[in-house]
Image (cartoon, rainbow, N blue to C red; front, side, top):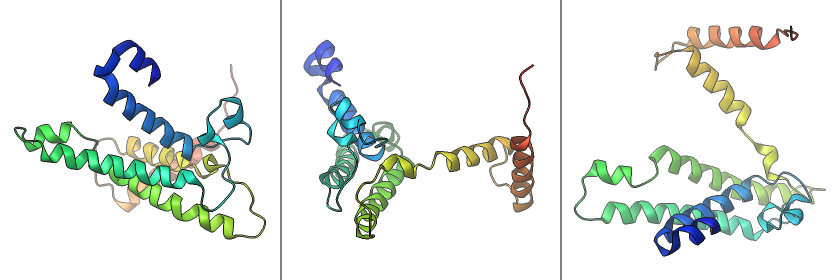
Length: 170
C-alpha cells in the first residue's frame, strides 16, 4: 500500500487504505510462527498470548469498515442496483468475513481459558484442506450444481482412491 501511495499519489489513497486493511486482516488470521512478527517487523504476526488481544478489536473494526463501505455504496444516488453491486464485495465474501471474525473473536478467549494455553498461532486453524476437498467435489460434478448424495459419495470414493495411489517419477 505504501508503494501505491508513492507512485499514485493522493488519487490512490482509498485503494492503498483498503490494501493496508486487508493486509492487516490476513496478518491477524495467519500467525505462523513465534518469531516471524519480530523478524518482519509486523506486530500483527506475533503469536496471540492473551484472551483480550488488541487484534480482536482490529478484526471487528475491519468488519465494520466493510459493512460501512457496503452501506455507503448503497446510498449513492444515480447508480442502478447492478452497478452498486459491482462497487462492493460480494455478499458471500462479506458473510464469510463476518463469520470468520465472529468465530475467531470467540475462539481466542476460549483458548486462553484452557489450562496451560499461553500462546496461539492462528494459522493452525486453517480450512484450506476443507476448501480443497469441496473444490475437487465441484470439479468432479462438472456443470451439475445440485449433485445427489450418491454422486457426492461416489466422487469422495474416487478421490480417496486416487489420492491413495502413489506414482513414482519416471
